[in-house]
Image (tube, rainbow, N blue to C red; front, side, top):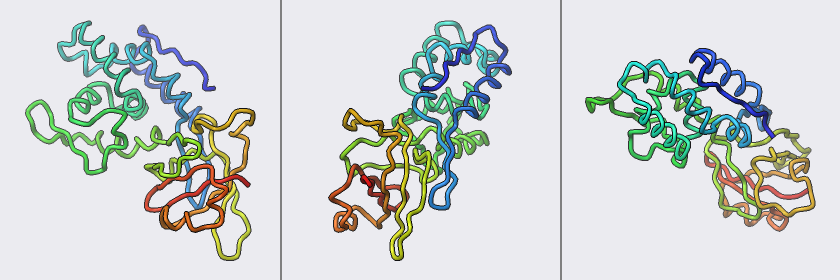
Length: 243
């Protein structure tokens, strides 16, 4: 489990941002897989960071919001909305120092909540005057959002999806010797495995992972019978099974 973090309302905004940055850096998981550098923030770290109390503390101290007429009931409403709809978006905005006013404007747009992440790279938002916002922070958000987009894989489901190949929740990977196939042994982060049979410590298990063009090609492979789950990511299908 991730460490607890408490962000005080009495702390300065700068101190709050430094605290969040340090927490994210400490809990970011990194690994190497198939020539890629993987990086993601586990579910337990996101849950510990994006509490109602922490969100409220940051919203209350945000300097851009303080410039506006933003009474206490508005602070509470915005805090509760973030806690209900946009905890992962809050983490990205805070870790990248984009600010809560940035997040407020972003969340005014249709289909902007955690359930719609990742937002497409062509995504644009309008300001209060209905003019497309040219804030460079939006580009930073779209690039950084991958760190909160590592999927949680369900046991036995073979039609799952992952948004980013460099944010797969793999903690260790070793390429296996094979003359004509690319096969890997991998271990997954415990926060990102769901519904697996009890009695085994699945995060310590080595799985066999093989890549295909699509799901239909994977169904024809001999390893299909030993499958645990599968997913599509960036035009590649990944079949995961036991050793």
